[in-house]
Amino acid sequence: MTEQLYYQDSYIKDFEAVVLSCIPNGNHFEAVLDRTAFFPEGGGQCADTGVLHIENREIQVFDVQERNGEIIHFIDKEILPGQTVIGELDFQERFSKMQQHTGEHIISGIVHRRFGYENVGFHLGKEEVTMDYDGPLTPEELRSIEYEANQVVAENREIRAYFPGTEELEKIPYRSKKELQGKIRIVEIQDCDICACCAPHVKTTGNVGLIKITNAIRYKGGMRLW
Image 1: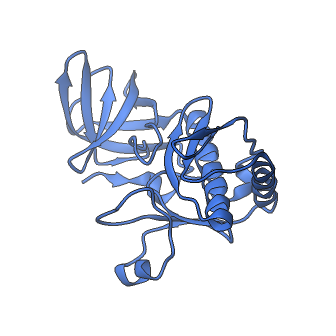
Image 2: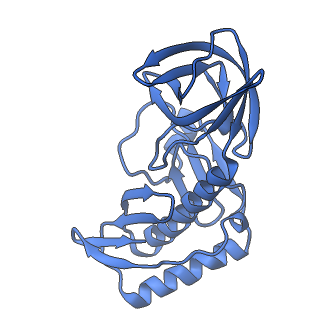
């Protein structure tokens, strides 16, 4: 099983790994490594991209997916089992995703605490984030939510990501967009939000930067925010 370095430290930019397997699939190859910092698509967040360095070659990693418990790296050139590679993330892209995803947690935590609404949909793109809630919000309420979110950012609160034990998990009042099974990872933003989430996040809220709600519409009886 691949060691998931992104759970040990979400700020890892490069790492060394050994190739476990590599098989052709159409015009690309699918590789499994013994350890990786590339996050596979999940939790509303698209996969990391970057490169693998081996000898004098540079292999593009253009997608990463989890399949039957294995983390598959989609690459443009063949590598051989047993070879050692240096993985290098496109960390500018990764950091932007962590900022945006953590910002979504802040907004969703405030909405849940103040109005009792659940986040029932989330998509993180390259240019914007969309969030769906199961209740309506007025323009005045949205301005208040945005103001409070930026207060949370300015206070640079700690963000903790961890895998609680079964007994501890039963006592945690966490949010989740769906029923979960197996090992559950909790992302907790101090005095703001507690949510089940598998994706990497920044370590303190100050790293999120400015939060701005750019648009909002009524959607399926609730609200969609950008």
